[in-house]
Length: 174
Image 1 (tube, rainbow, N blue to C red):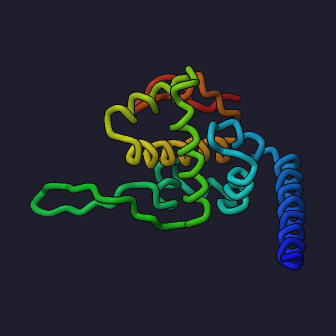
Image 2 (image 1 turned 120 degrees about the vertical axis):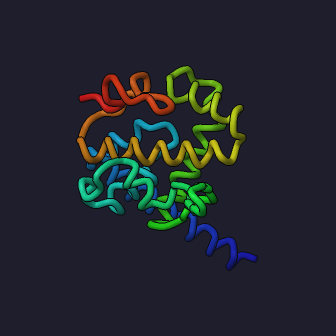
């Protein structure tokens, strides 16, 4: 029992050291700091996104980035009728998992916040249910993350367009 307790203590110390390393990386990386402005994106997700993506301009837009992560529905067509299935789950499993977990946090706390994205999350959850809203929020977070990293700008949740709003200012501000 004492040997297991000592191993547990050693693991706790390693986890603390790793957390400190991640915090140091985020502190020194402007892209990771900007990414953490998204509700549900913390130091681990921001650090993983910056290091996994590399150059975000390799993607034409946020939709392409979300598709690369596998956060879009699989499509099957027959006879001119398109059917949407489950998400494709391509790309980085680790980053996709972190974005979904961050989306879970955003969905659970959306009722307590009053920005446009949070209002959209509450309405979406009422309309399509918890799990579909979860994937939709992860998709939106991926698109916002791409915009932040590709353009090098700050995220402003009060200006972020909610569902399918195209005209007007970009959700990312300088």
